[in-house]
Image (cartoon, rainbow, N blue to C red; front, side, top):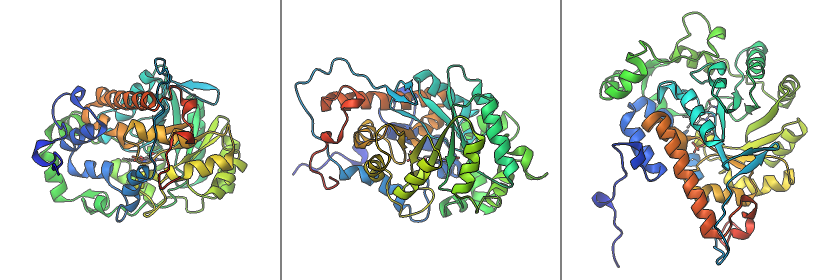
Length: 401
Ligand SMILES: Cc1cc2nc3c(=O)[nH]c(=O)nc-3n(C[C@H](O)[C@H](O)[C@H](O)COP(=O)(O)O)c2cc1C
């Protein structure tokens, strides 16, 4: 048998221009080279034994696709409709916090790359930019993701601000009533909000990151949307993260979601749903869609891969109800599979973050371009030139079906 070509003969592209990145894994290698350890760990890691994290990737192996041949695939259309509005590609960018730690002004940079590609960008509550700053991106499809901390007045203010800034959708994340147990992350801290000495020394070994992210601005990025609510003396990056941890709304329930629904006049997505009874509850609460998600393996360990929830959720919700899915998507074929199982669109978490961390706006655009090309090629090879052609019929008799 010929041994596989591995080891020193095969390497990810981890240096140089992001244009050299062939895959999301190349962008990941570039990102991990550029970032200091504590920031790379925050980006990469999952909770506890990272079973959920790895399970998200493994889930795709439960399905196999079968190509149909001799179909005219000269005109491929990757567009999807969401709430009667077209999105140029069948994926958008998931909400992620601390983007300013990956690249200066990371939230706005991601939003610009998304707008350029004609896709949605979801801004996190723990983003490092104001809602207004991201709303200022021309041509953007801007969603705001809500975490509830402290008294109701905090989420009420955030919701009102998102409305005033013209956000299309509010994405209420419900899988984070407490923070996932991320010990690898905590190991970089000597005490809450205090990086360990070795993590600080490691920063010095990443001068490009240090200069652009901290030194040039004179301080670490903050959380401007939460600053007004955090106590005096706790309004810097680590202070507010600490404040959010101790002010999480353990009492969040469907009644609270109904109150948010009543206040928010735009589209409402409930993110972090995996159980079919919760899909039903979200519909009953007046949601305009759900995001099937396990938070990219960062919350409950040993959670179901959201890919496996897509077909059951479609059966429960029926046709026409928007179902989005995220967690583990790194390849165009992954996206194609989720669409075929019944999702309307996929949200990208780390895939675009790797691009951002590797090269800012150009890097994020490179991640989108790589996945666009991969989705297109997979659809052509499958003989399915339109998203509507992606049905369960593309699957062979893999163990998942
Ligand atoms: C670094 C990082 C930060 C995140 N921050 C948030 C957040 O602030 N709000 C939220 O709803 N989800 C957050 N998520 C979860 C993502 O929205 C998404 O569910 C997840 O990244 C999808 O998995 P993937 O990274 O494997 O694509 C975060 C994920 C990552 C990787």
